[in-house]
Image (cartoon, rainbow, N blue to C red; front, side):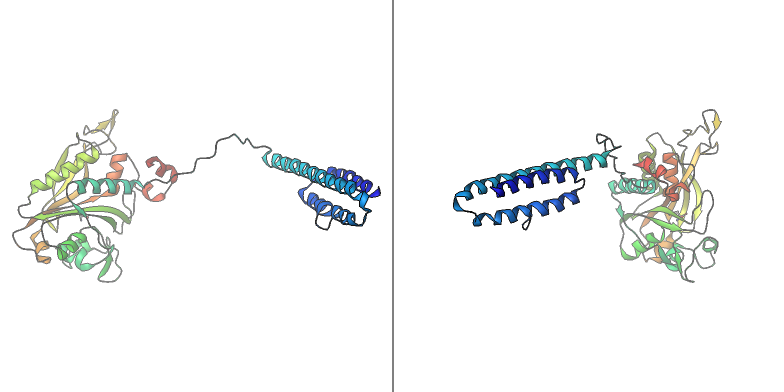
Length: 344
Ligand code: PHE
């Protein structure tokens, strides 16, 4: 029966052509040619109904057998090609190597310190408030007892936008904004960016401050001292000593600057036999300015005469430098990941 012989030939031919097909694309062409809907096998099968009835069962069985055989051969070749393609792609790779761990971001040291300080104050009952970085003369100077001719307004320090609009030079305007909209008693802190026309080793045109303000009946310098001592000990450790030095700010009276015992040398003035570079051998480092709110500030916000309060303003970069032993202010703003990752 020549139809059975034709089918057997087809298998042999398929075997030969499969062996020569090196790509999945060639394989697909071959599959369509032999096994496709209009392929060679389909055409042979379409001749079956024309055979004499007694030949049909044998031819039909042969056709089915050949069809399965071809499909199996095709499947084998396809698996082999896929496996070698994968092996090629993996050549030179060690698939058992562990993956590369993704980099995790970390908070900036300035953010870490600001958050830590805010948490210390909120635990003491202070509320976090904020104000604009683009400020006007009234809040930044006038209401803080700095009239137009005051030296603190010097063009050298302040970044002006117009004659009356400027980048705030400190967070103290938030004191005024808070008192202008809320009655005493209040206890707030205001973290944020401040701007000064200043740029050298220890100054950047933008840096961060945290302002503090507490107003009530009977607030005294003792409250200020207690509060700031608690802050310093929470941030720098319970053995840190605190010193108040008389100073001057137009918006506080009396005013003080607060020093803490040097975190590098522990207040001794020398470290590992060398003069201490952090405190310049004095044993103390300055961390903030503070004082009792000046009556002129209270009257600018129409507060009654019977209240008193304290305020302070602290430099966040300064605290971060002291706490983490960072020697160069510029590191905070260079965004070198080798520096930043140490705080992860
Ligand atoms: N605003 C002052 C400064 O930037 C700091 C300060 C705040 C001083 C509050 C006293 C009271 O230097």
